[in-house]
Amino acid sequence: MSTPRPLIAGNWKMNGLAASLGEVRALIGALEDRSPGCRVAICPPATLLERLACSATGSALEVGGQDCRAETTGAFTGDVSAEMLRDCGANLVILGHSERRAGYGESNSVVASKVEAALMAGLEPIVCVGESLTEREAGTALSVVTSQVRGSLPAVLAGRIFAVAYEPVWAIGTGLTPTIEQIEEMHRAIRETLTQMFGEAGRVPPILYGGSVKPSNASEILGACEVGGALVGGASLKAVDFLGIISAA
Ligand code: PEP
Image (cartoon, rainbow, N blue to C red; front, top):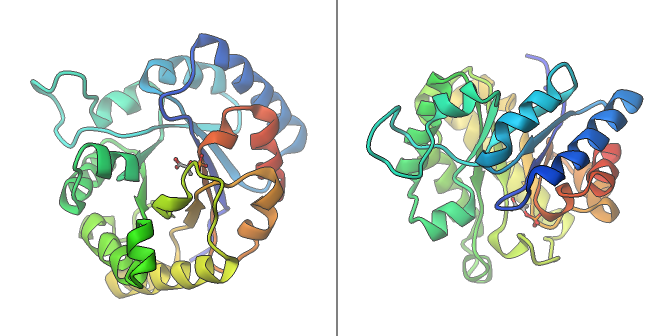
């Protein structure tokens, strides 16, 4: 089993209008010049997905959704299915982001059903886990995160291509980051959980780190043990910042 290339994925959240496609064109141009040793993806809001995917056709840039509904069709106003994301040109989808878990009450089992739907549609899931500040301060971060991993990753993932993103909730959009020791401790615990769940195949999926990654800290974070890439929010909105992170991978 070969180690996959690191994955650097940008989560634009609810940011971006048609004018933002200029950033994507700048990013694609730079990727052509540099041919980085990592995979690069942007997960725009659903409104930009198809246009972004069209711009990225034939380039090294991959495209992902930020969430999907577990059901394939039906009366779910405002939601999108995994198949719809695929139909727009996405090959990845972020699932279980803490903003979805906290803001929409998404439980581990809801996330697990979305993962199954993503696989059925041919999408590669990036499954997010991470503890709150209260949990970190209470000394329960490891048990919270490993139980999120167990509950959010269905057995059907065995041997499939997916990624886990460790995103401490208190580090998202705050400028705060855990120490490298804390990141390595958590990534090792996630890897051990993956191997308990999936055997040798559990050594393959990249474990991304997310939470205030920027060009100035990317190299140290991406160099940490068991860090197989990054999920980047704010610093993915501008091509120049995102490229600074990509260069560090
Ligand atoms: C995120 O929302 O997934 C994230 C990591 O955000 P930021 O990089 O802005 O902290």
